[in-house]
Image (cartoon, rainbow over all chains, first blue to last red; front, side):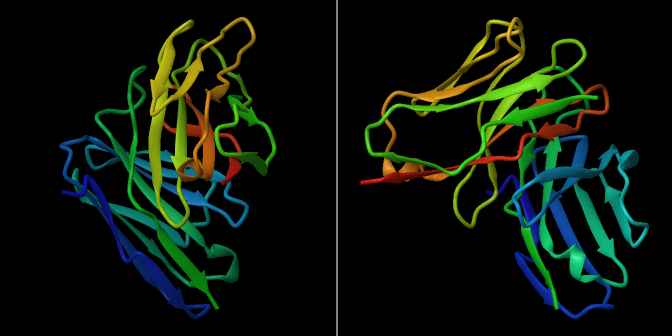
Length: 115
Length: 112
């Protein structure tokens, strides 16, 4: 059983399109995250939800909108895609936010290429 | 603010060589520290972690010790294998909101 799963694994699309990436975790965790990995492999937090409530919203264009229909799912919708949005997007989850011993478990990533 | 600095790569070693990847951090308090590994074409996997000073995390022959006096968490392995070729990320748990703050990653290539 995959603990944190993402779909799709690969996404190739044209500039200006709108696309969504889905994430699901079956670990019973309360907290979920979206991270972006750029072409130089640098990873940075984008959003975090705890029990369906947004708790972290980094400086991300408002074309990116996360949605958490329940605490097992955190989706990422991107409007008006731009070339610079090409990256690998990782979903992660943890039992709760900020606990000193928390481990985050990552999904396999979604490789987005905007043409 | 909190940050993580790790040695620039790429690092190329022969099989059975000794590995050290340096990681230092800047943070208020004593955050938990992690090493994650990303194999080619795959996602991030937790390799090891330490949650307080002087803790040693270990897994798959890799070790790292949380040193608060030098604010370091260097990754070591006594004898690397070709299968260890991957990108290694040092990270700290950045505050009450719980997000990880990552270093820039170090690519390791192990040659037979």
